[in-house]
Amino acid sequence: MYYSLKKHCPDFHLYIFAFDDTLMNILNIMKLEHVTAISLKEFEDEELLRVKPTRTKGEYCWTCSSSTILYCLKKYSLDHCTYIDSDIYFFSNPASLIDEMGTNDVSLSPHRYTDCYDQTELSGIYCVQFMTFRNTENGLNILNWWRNACIDWCYSKPEDGKFGDQKYLDDWPTRFKGIHILENLGGGVAPWNMQQYTFIKTSKGIIGTETSSGKKFDIVFFHFHALKCNQCRNIKEFVYTDYELPQTAKKHIYKTYLPHLIHIYRQIRKIDKSLLPFRTKNVYYKSWLFIIGKRIINGITNYYYWI
Picture 1 (cartoon, one colour):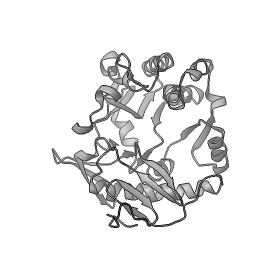
Picture 2 (cartoon, rainbow, N blue to C red):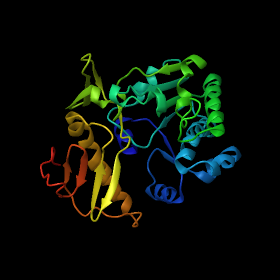
Picture 3 (spheres, rainbow, N blue to C red):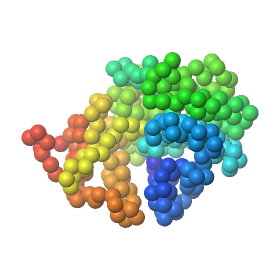
Picture 4 (cartoon, helix red, strand yellow):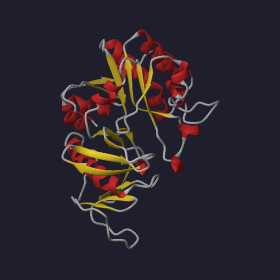
């Protein structure tokens, strides 16, 4: 995410919250430009520490999402702050999404589910993947409301219309004023909606086309949700079984992301020797499985793309 943001956005500062000492150590050694690394010791307050023992690691991360935004706005006196999930990869400048907000105080990105993957009832209308809050009275009021709600209840289970930190967003357009819902289809292409689009690569970036309307748009970011990496002897498998991947998405989006991910992994391994190495170099694609290194799966040796 960081390197893709650096490539496409000339003016940014990234605040990375390191939820363990290993990551904090790696970030301190890497000394990334335009980055401030923040440890849990710096960030956690009494209210977060009070509920921390009642949450799993994943639930605690969700509990903290609103608090990380509030911390940055107050600590660094920012005009605005955008929360970004770490499994996002930028294909163009996200400034267009900030500009789209106009004078509003908060922006939300809808899931835009493909019908067969519609999880609105469980996961909500909007995704906590790219959310911008302005440092205004209204923006802070909304953010504090969300933080208090997450401290009170934030679990990985449905209960009374709640789920994690995300279902709280469903009624914001009617509960609060100053809410903007992102209209740019390129802001939030993800596994649960990419079946609605076809993609082509141009000299300017990745262009998506909505198949139902023919509407074209530049991809701003792709959310690589649910991409899993398994170790099998000396081979790493990138498994992706939850959603159907269109051919053009594999060719133009995943083909860009995976080699970059592997390159960064190797760079980080120079710092942290405990990470298992990649023993092979070539990348092969199968319809539901990404494989690093030559391997035959269930007798199938034909793969879609070669890098």
